Image (tube, rainbow, N blue to C red):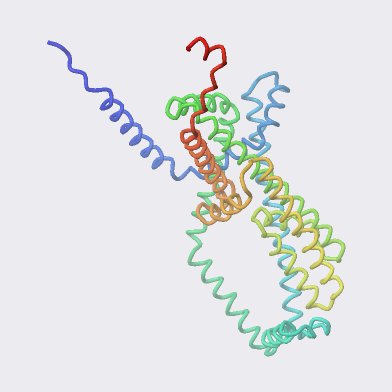
Length: 374
């Protein structure tokens, strides 16, 4: 009896369906850990040149090099946020005490600021509302503190659960980073071979888009953020603000989000103006607009667009849209998604242009050929 084989298109369709179901099931299983894996991949990608140096130092022993890099990442990712939290607690407590003391004593808007049309009277009215009835202000602050205490008490279990989940994700990210360091090169080669079998040689353009955009966004965001934090810290130190290093670090952290640095230096400048340091406040405003924002408006677009060949507007939409859709990881995931879409669009456009191009005209026959034909 002769065996009956199904047609090739049916076999291929069943294999594709099976792979699609397995891929969907795998995503469902890994869904709680996708963010941690994505963070691990970004950290490994950014620090890969340093890892390769360590591999050479360890005479090619990738396991020890991966372990060393993973421990270094763990120390950095724990020590820096811990330092920021401790400094934030100390500086935040001091700033709140100063603000309350100023409100209790009564705030008088400086004359140069009060003379500004529309803005001056509005600010003076708001300060009068805040400092008008000090007893009522104290009652309001006490009620606010009580409400916060009740909220924390009601959500204590949820907060502890979130803390435990974040600790688990952090551990998973570090564990993933170790294996990506050790086996990442082999995994990358296998992924490229599999995708080339599915998509053909065009997959190289997609890999280039992902790599270039990730590198550009990471370097652009980090370098611009660090530069903005350093420049802003110099301004804080120059006008006499306490803990300029901490506020510079806070500025660098918020500067990861485009136009986020203004959330630090603008309130700082306004506080100086309200407390009577008019020259320092105006100077900090000018420094922020001319120096700090200049980095955000010029350096970041040049770095990102120059490396990735992706228009900065698309990167900006990717950063802001990714931040809203995926949280902090969206700062990097959003631009990469749009960059791959742009690469696909450009490839299709080039293919369509090549397919619709008119055929080249035939070369005219030589005179000898015409005579021979005659």
